[in-house]
Image (tube, rainbow, N blue to C red):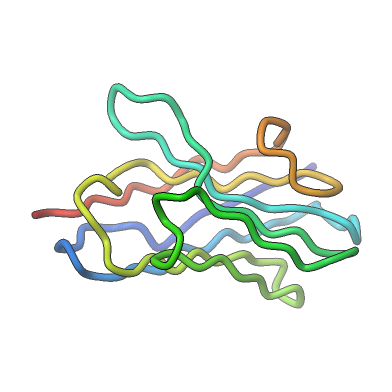
Length: 122
């Protein structure tokens, strides 16, 4: 059974940084993708970033976070990280980790974590 556990959220001032972690268990396929999504109050959940490995280490970002957020992985720990820099109040949301077997497909992540709250104050 796949389990994803996020950590690292919190309250930060605008311009600050956070690092989110997502520890995966039960996901042993050599080709996989893991991503981060977020949902702000009264808004739809949106894609933030993803990383695929096992065939090519590709990373994907939504335009609003390019140059500010960085996704990375530690295969030995089966953990994916999202470094959030230059945070803005509009980045405030619950951030969810997601995983799938195979390459990144933005609308096809079957496994989800419980989420971690990120709040950016102005």
